[in-house]
Image (cartoon, rainbow, N blue to C red; front, side, top):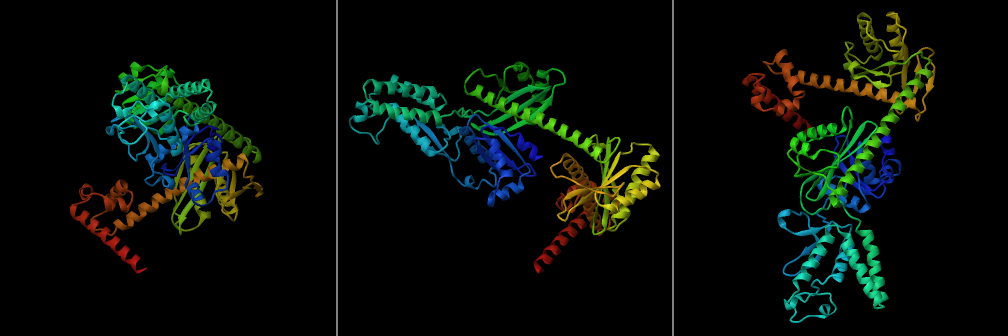
Length: 597
């Protein structure tokens, strides 16, 4: 349930991904506080495009990052990777600011924008940066601290920058190579994530200005240092080596292991995978087995970063990949980031399981007390479905001690082929419990029917004829087709249901499950019935071949699109051609009818 999941979102920075019912990412966002931002979509007032997007959201995922800056860059990477339909501001050809270091014909840094950065380009690109202003300010600071070439063209003599120590005199071509290499190393080290090197340089310059009583310049550099501390909050995924790698973080607690795998491709964090495994024997062996199975089904990157505690040699032998346990630096930070996500996922899953356990047990017990039952171990719930009286079906789901027991679910194709809920219910109840008496199988403590007094009476008539004394209740809907009352078969009293109560959520869950189960069965029968009626038009397709075609293809569309050679494995070439021709002519007729309309 989204409501439960929303409560467990952490108050941490990160990127969130909204998904539709098919699991497709339809929107990617970032937040300084994931809890506040994600909850605002579902609990606040939303309008326009946002309201439309929220109406399609069936689930959401998120990746926790170390800072808001990292969240921003992760958001960019995910948008570029998945192109979500609701990120309209980022679906054009807009690119993001990077800093490029150029070493020939002379060293230079500049702000650059690239839509596609590939390793073969051999550009030294660093970023992206949160905004163009931040990138430009950093470039200006680097130019101020290091003697890069400042002027355009190639003057015939050195300029003022050379005399104040902010240029190496490139126009003279008599350059101190040692200074040049040291400068390049410092700048590249800083751009790759070593913030300390630039901060130390700023502090050194500040001290120099202060010693010479140039307090105004020292104050300017102090402001720059404060800005650097804010904007250069390190982005852990920017390693700038274009190596495809996965990062595996694990967290162990309460007999379970939370797993988070970050996918980094071309220097970009493009997604993650979370899972939870139960420790049966040895935790290290469980992890090794899980990782082996994971990479048996997924792409194996060039490098896999893992935390200490796992046997690198064993993993390398099991999986043909370069496993590394980083000890420091950006790679170590990446592992910490994965570990943080693994811990959050494990904590959330355990909390959710405990809440579900408590809610289920409490709700089942509250329902037992409400209905004055001695015991409430098993519940049978029924629902009917038909289309204008055709394809009448019924479904039964079973909840045992508050949980769905899918092995006990049953489908019923009803002989009452008209819109008659009363006799449909009678037929199904008789078939279910007459068989239970013959086979001496388990009987329920409670029967729930999706309807009012009419459905209850139909059920009671059959139970009485079978001499069975089982409590029956009906779920009654209001004028908005929402369940809001419970009808007791003993007294026919109407029991109002508080929509915030455990009992209401419990009964709604049962009702939704039996409805889903029955409707799916009804759709299957309708689909097969439609195929069957169409296949009856083709000479040469008898009952046996008809069943084979229905079993293999499921619907007319699949048959129409099936390769001719494939069809001839079930029916003859002549019959297959006739079937194809019939389906084509049928589509043509339908299209013409649509045009006439």
